[in-house]
Image (cartoon, rainbow, N blue to C red):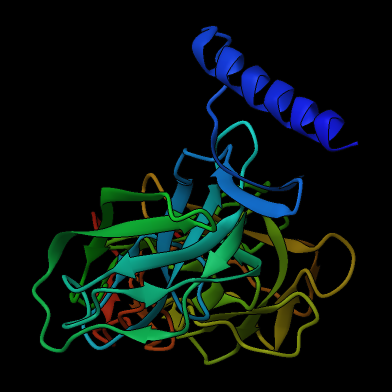
Length: 328
């Protein structure tokens, strides 16, 4: 029996040597196994995993709002990542650590925790705890790095992941209307109101859970003689959205009037290429009048709106640009 054990052990060792020298592409290191030779016990350590993990996607995103890749000084944010371990027999990811010291002073090895997370519609498997950017922090492009380590101790450093620091409040730059109905100067189904910002506005600061895609809203017109005002409300007509108020400088309604509260809903869409939010009127409910005189509207924005970095909107009012013209 002892000779048979010795023979089996020799064959196993010989096979390992042949595989190592055969060029078969097998990497053998630290395989853990035990064998007995007569009264002696032997333990060998080896592992097939000699490849470090790789981070495939990562982003920094501020807390609560939609757009990722931007932060502001003193703002809060998370670091997200997706990663996978390599090798023929991966040992699994042990740790992922972020060096975000360019954004948060002293944060050179912040742990990412496994879980189910989402940032700007993308699913991630790892995320840090909530972090706070340094204040003051200069605006511009910054970078961070990630170090991922597997259970077998293989480690990979990946650098130069980008994030943009923006500390400048967005401003209102223009307000315009366009006729989409039959009569100029009369609010009708299909008419449009376009709000233009100095930079892209985070849609979730305008309406909770909004991504910027077309969504239903209600537009309320308030009668104020020849200074009627306009505000945009949620599709359920229960919450005023953070688009502020527009003084039309005209007489378009003679009583409280809505667009989209019943019948065809009004819609709202964000265009990130032009920094515009366009509201298209739905079915009109109320008492309207026609005012085709040329005028210049004034938009007073809401400071509840934020840009992609989370910087609050300036409250400075903006007059309609261009020559005075009829509205709607």
